[in-house]
Length: 475
Image (cartoon, rainbow, N blue to C red; front, side, top):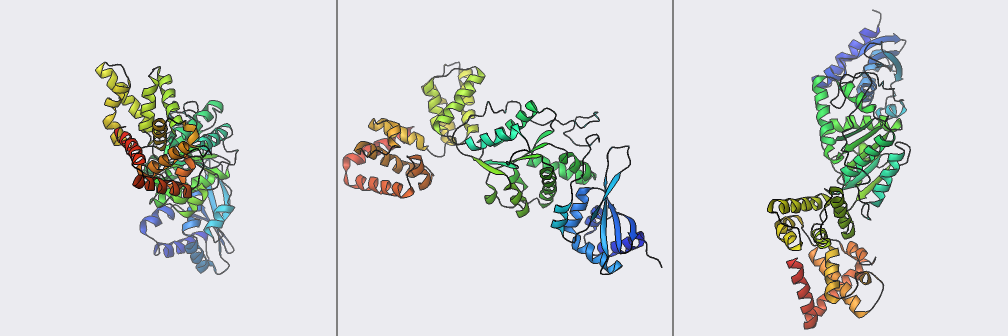
């Protein structure tokens, strides 16, 4: 009996069906059509480029064995990929050979064009429009103007501004912004998106959280419209993915994002991702995805210093048209040093209490109203506050503590500040040394030992330290 493309492919399917789960077979093999058989080359038609990449990555070994079993050792498989230009047009195709290696096959394939005239079903699309229109899901209040710059975020902000000016055209692709909770990752990422929309309004920009992306992917699987889901995301010019650390353990979601990431990056589109940790510290994510996160620039956001925290509060007060005494702002900035979100939350709480009780805000009211908030929020006293308290106690200029001077009173204030920073904060010795004038950790160790020795041998010195510690506890 003469072999045909259909008979050869059906024989392949029988073997494949016995070697993979039923659901996988239905999802990835039933939609395939046999097109033609020319000599020892079997050509099959698959619904999309993503479909092709998935097969080559997950089932290439099984496909190679089954095809060779039917067509001999020289048997080869080629793909015919369908990409719909519009809902009414006939599909056009392109042939892709199977390389026998998933990774190589993926890298050698050229990304297929995605039509912006197709009505793609996606919750972000504005319905009723033939041309793809996307609600970027951006908060207009998140801008570069409202993002206060300081030493804690200068690199990330500068890189973000460069990306916003030339999305996809800098070496910062992807731009990964990472840092702890409430330090401004989402603000900065959305500020980039808002700036792109302001200067390049025709660009398709989309902000999406990892959780929403995952839920959309699950819905697409349930509704059997994976192609629409992938095509939609591959059409973006700027994709902002928030909290990628939440991809941990979600293998299928990671896989779909991996393909979308590859397509956008190869097409020169901009990717911006945020995370609570640096790529090297993320767990539960596939190595191939982590390696791509490292392609561009990883910039961290750190806890803002006292001056930056005060600037943030002053900016917020100015924006809201509110004036507060400088000592109130300084008090809040000193005591709320975990993150920007809690800092602003403390100020909002203070304003609310003032309005409800019809009292003018002064330092006493601030201390009274924020006592419980500060106790719960501030897990540790800041080095800035310790330094300020010590300098005020000994009546020495703050800037002198970080200088190179060896004057006795300055050295004493510096050593006590280091000792208290080690005792009352969770900061590393290296960070303490860097804070107090760029000194190394051995200097901090020596300072702490000196203070402990003096406490044991000098009653007057011991009283100084005890007095300052008492003030720290009362603050």
